[in-house]
Amino acid sequence: MRARVYKSTGSWYTVKTEEGNFCVARIKGIFKLDGITSTNPLAVGDWVKMEHEAGGEEGGWIITGIDSRNNYINRLSPANKYQHHIIASNLDQSILIATLKDPKTSQGFVDRFLVAGESYHIPSVIVFNKSDIYREKEMNLFHERKQMYASIGYKVVLMSLEQQTGMEEIENILRNKTTLLSGHSGVGKSSFINSVVPGKELKTQDVSGWSGKGIHTTTFAEMYDIPLLNARIVDTPGIREFGLVDIPKQELSHYFPEMRSRLQDCQFNNCLHINEPGCAIKKALNEGKLSLDRYVSYCMMLDSIEEKTY
Ligand code: GDP
Ligand code: ZN
Image (cartoon, rainbow, N blue to C red; front, side, top):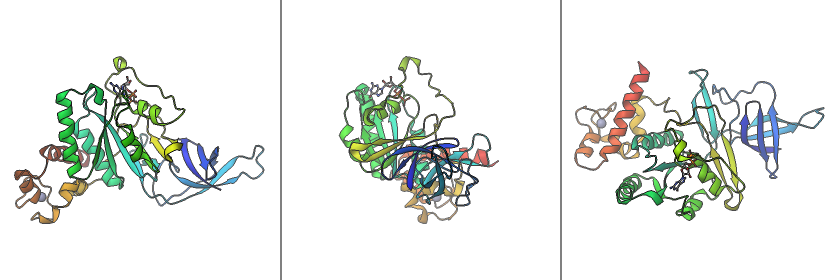
């Protein structure tokens, strides 16, 4: 029997069989996967094989195998920094819910998300929520960002969950796909899930009670069905950001599409595009062909990698 993991709570997994039934299953013994050192052998989104437990009184399900993953997202294990914790797998795309007001998502945060998506080979979509409270200043900023991100290949959508605008475009993006949902606290992630997933009533936060810090509790990823769209959404409550942990300095620019296409023109093949002579990135920047904000994000990410190395 094949099934897909919808929720993991340590040793028990909620899975959905190919016939469409939800049941609970567990794994037995040691599971070794692809040589990856992971603290959790199975992740939300995994396709597994299961069997009825021999002699089990209630006929419980035992997971006996796992299909290889198309992709997965991970982060460093909170308990052991040399181990990775796989959060979700087999994702078709990821959506970042961002806002330009109450709270404002920084461009650095958006760009780190996009770099993570590039490194996991998962296409990213940026959705700006709360358009109902944007005034001229925020609308101008939205159009500026949309144009800039579209020019380097990212889809950008304007949405208001409050007024239910932009929803058709979002539904078309979600249709027939498994989508990871991301965004920092207060942007409307829970409201989004409540709006698109039938029968879901996640608690939303009162803006007045929003501390701006986010809550650091250990929570688990969970997948939700949207039957009408034949779609699935993966929520990762409590996880602010996915790791850029494995990206060496030299490789960072490969995850900026607008830099990637120019790298072969740098004089040195190990160019970090800071102050090396004959740098094609700096040249394009000076000619106004690259976004200065994106370059600033690049420099900040490069710095954060350096700190971790020493
Ligand atoms: P989460 O922390 O990302 O899960 O965000 P919530 O869904 O809890 O939303 C945070 C606050 O923003 C709540 O008070 C929501 O009612 C509010 N909110 C969500 N979407 C919108 C929107 O489109 N417009 C406005 N004005 N407020 C929104
Ligand atoms: Zn360069």
